[in-house]
Image (tube, rainbow, N blue to C red; front, side, top):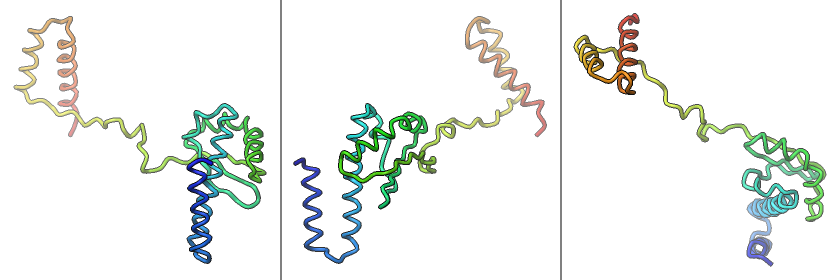
Length: 169
């Protein structure tokens, strides 16, 4: 017996003795059942060759009619698992769970998760150069090698400065 299974047995035994009529007993029992389903899911993923997805898939809703819902945040995983649903069902049944149906769902993005598109820095409006600043940059441009990246950067800066000064406020 593994440590995990031993810990589960001990929790069940404690609950049956100390919390006979407590609402906590049902919560702990559901937690324990969900853990057993999660272990069966990991074993099923191992047997079907999808063990590399085990950290991305988890048990969601379960009901007494034999339906379980698996959740992931990646639609590509669902498209791959659809072909393996009969094998997953078989693995759950072999583990002793009366699973009749497996549904696959993609979780929506959470507002707490970082969105890759929002990580891009927003560009601020360019600041216009004063006449003396513009003149200084022009002088520097004349003394810089035209083949250098610095020359190109200064040239772009001056070009953008002209655009900004022409833009209505």
